[in-house]
Length: 416
Ligand code: CAA
Image (cartoon, rainbow, N blue to C red; front, side, top):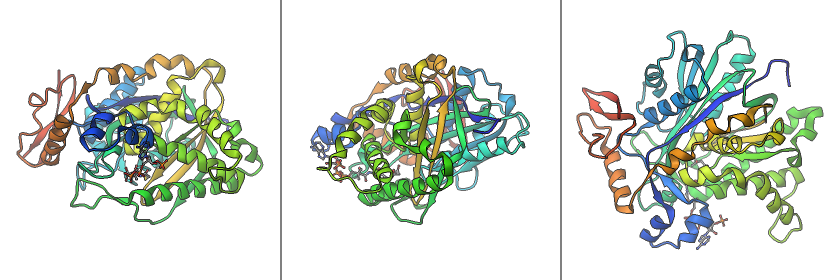
């Protein structure tokens, strides 16, 4: 790594205060619950109310990251919100977040979109900004925020969710150093998942999207190997403490790890091959332990790999500090990046600040009927003049709320 280290200095998650159990959803859809829980790998799914939007989720995650790690808002010189579920065709979510967090006017503020890849693009841009010297000691706040919607009774329904992960990127970070050399990129125009301007719901070719994701992983790995040069031994999976992938549903991370081994071995591995035992053990050691938050939140699109990262960091034990791990982000359409990183000595001492489970435990469980009513109300909550985003109606409180659109202007209020 270079003399100046750059990476993640603070991180926090925020999600809606309600969820539905996947087993209950499966039963309501006449599906074997084992398909959702084991086949797809999801236990619960966060459900947004009409008072949650990409701005409220992003702002609350940003506020938690700044407060929990004592980062002065005045030190932020770049703010990026990565999202594929923005609230306006022109105005970025980031500028609302900028005001709501009280960030300085001398701040470069924008939104990035490339499906689930938007926040990773923001993260690497922030790294380049700091390494170039243009940051002048300032920090970047990168927030991944999304509400994943496929619609009721669709094949994608069990792979929905909502939430945001905010990260402060700085020189000499306290949690994670990003490697400025060991990263690989991939882009290819494919129609696996998209959301036309006229739709709140994603269009998806589900099984094809899985193939595109895995092909993108292979492409990133090839690029990474070329760039690694003499450092190629550092890419070996057995040298990695964890392998974190984009997690639209947790089974996908396991499929990605299988592909990770295949590209390393240089050949496909079939179910009956002897390497399967080694791959299964590697999944249990490097992938599965860090999926417990994703299992409870569902798909948060661009933030999902960073939710797995948060899980990894909150469970870090001091003996593993300083070890390398990989981060893979995939955005349908498609764009992807595979980035190597390592934890910083002392990172394990932040476990208490990092743990979002008290907030997850405090969420309200919804019946499937209540979840469906919320989804239907969310469809129209953006309309000008509607009263559907009334916090009292949905018993929402203790957080920042979207309270409706008045005179074509979105309204935000903190509700106690
Ligand atoms: N018990 C246990 N397991 C069962 C089961 C049962 N009774 N029934 C089925 N399963 C297993 C299947 O074997 C399968 O596992 P494998 O993939 O390991 O074989 C799994 O459950 C899913 O079964 P199906 O493939 O039959 O399910 P499906 O046809 O309903 O589709 C899906 C699943 C494609 C993920 C669908 O939910 C979907 O389209 N989701 C949205 C797209 C998506 O998430 N794509 C991911 C890559 S793209 C991306 O990552 C970007 C992004 O965020 C969208």
